[in-house]
Amino acid sequence: PNAFNCFDFLGIGGALRENAVYIDRLRLMDALSGEEICHIPLDEDFRERFGNPYAVVHRADLHLDLLEACRSSGKVEMRTRHAVCGYRQDENAVFVQVENRDEIEGTALIGADGLRSAVRRQMLDDDPPRVSGHTTYRSVIPTESMPEDLRWNAATLWAGPKCHIVHYPLKGWKVFNLVVTFHNDVREAVAGKPVSREEVEQGFEHIHPRPKQVIDHGTDWRLWVLCDRDPVRNWVDGRVALLGDAAHPMLQYFAQGACMAMEDAVSLSHRCRTEQDLDKALALYLEDRMVRTSRVVIDSRLIGDHIYHPSGAAASVRNSVMRSFSPEDWYDRLEWLYQGGKPEG
Image (cartoon, rainbow, N blue to C red; front, side):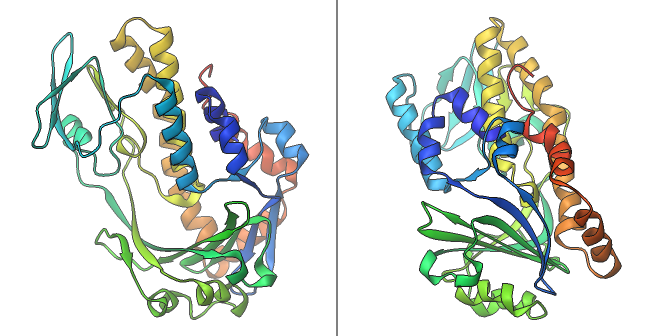
């Protein structure tokens, strides 16, 4: 819901709603027993509470809608093959250094250049990203290849000891997204490496046959080792600011990485529109975003440990506690996340 607030603010909410799949519930399943632990309904009560639906959108569709909005605005010049490697600034301008090209002069620089941001490296000179030791395998398959008994209109999480499986429909129910994660303590960052099904299966031999079908039906698996960073108090340097993963990369367990980046963009836009002084606008943008994004970074780690991957007695406690929550209990606990991040806040 918080992402739709951003899309509406940026004028692409209508287009995104056409490409979204509106799921009925969030389901938490036990990967060992094959039984449901609990679910959160995403019906009319949810929409009334948070002002927007819960939906899933294919990343390529989101990128295309953003691209078309930039092209049609008449205000955005897009340049490809311009790798930013640094910057310098004075009281009037920023000069962006680009590999094998002339400097580009501008009023401000927003470093939205991801986990290994070159802008961040110069600004903060901090440590490399933290390698979590969690390996994620991803696959997208046609809906007809998804086991019929798992074709649910839900975002489904199968939680097991040091492992989990997530699946949900995309692109008008044409495909299912499969996300399979194993806490195997790998310490080398890898992104998008093709792997065999046999490699994916190695961390899931102990789970129930029902969720294991998801791995059996996946194709063209690719591997990512998840990384994040500890929160920092500052990501603004004069006329230069960071945004999204460059500022606050987070693990996937809250499903909020892209949402937080969109909220950043909305806050930045709002502050630059309402403040004539650029330094003040960027300072207020940081003030708006630092605590909220830090909480999501930290909570994402905690959720991974205590909801996605616990074992033994810890898993039994998780099951008991989560079964005790009513829908209203869940909505109360999600209020800060789904109602926050608005520019007026």
